[in-house]
Length: 357
Image 1 (cartoon, rainbow, N blue to C red):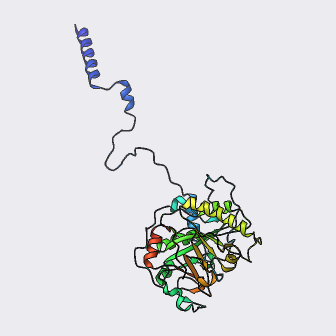
Image 2 (image 1 turned 120 degrees about the vertical axis):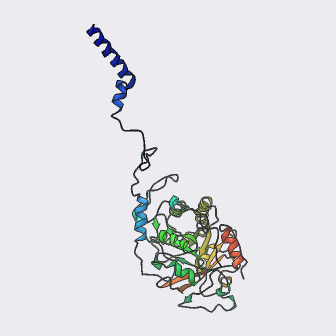
């Protein structure tokens, strides 16, 4: 009877083991990592992708390190062809590749909303002038809101000093033609905003390139930013330009209209026309009555140089002096008082036509 008893003992032991142990498959799972977490290690819900340095960040670093150019010409809106590189052949619906030479970040990186209007009071005029003009009772100093326009020729601008000395707004050279970008545009665009100036961008029109190409180039390089001033088309005859073509008045007006229509559709703002006396005399007298004008008149009041033309901005000096720049800088003034300035600029630069004095 000892053998049956032993067999019964073994069978009972095996049954007891089966009730207290895992199955063979569960035993294999014991080799896997535990699903438990501790307070010191948090398991991510999804894999964490590494973030490589983007081309835009590299371009931004290049822009910040861009050297200043001390060879400054007397005027800020009269030069062109600053940086040349091939224009990409891309459809309008495709963003062009970002090249380091362009020194421009994709617009989406800069499309944050800007402050709706200047928070503090308008800074009063404090500039000096290397060649002051006595405008008499029509002196631009009687107007409240002064500003500047700049390009690469002003080098590394100290925007804080410009602001303190009386610059409430700045128009910044962005592009000319269909494949040229001012190498200081992005730095100036960011820093003017950081210093509290209202900012806008301008394009130097090139008469040997189609208007559509030029509009596309400007749009690709100038961010669409809430609070920015309306874009500017700079039209003038430039004897230093590689383009010697002088189209007929009819062709000039046609090309300008194509360019301005494209910009207005994209930015939702009617462009401002900047011009000089000789170009105005040849092409613009009586034209574009519904567009705001920015007039260059450095010797006499605009009412004397551009009879019967209403204007929004007056460029009254090309020889301004400021602690914020080395050399000379263009000085401009808004045609209105501080209240009108706040209403116009705060409304996104909606059209305002001031009566000429």
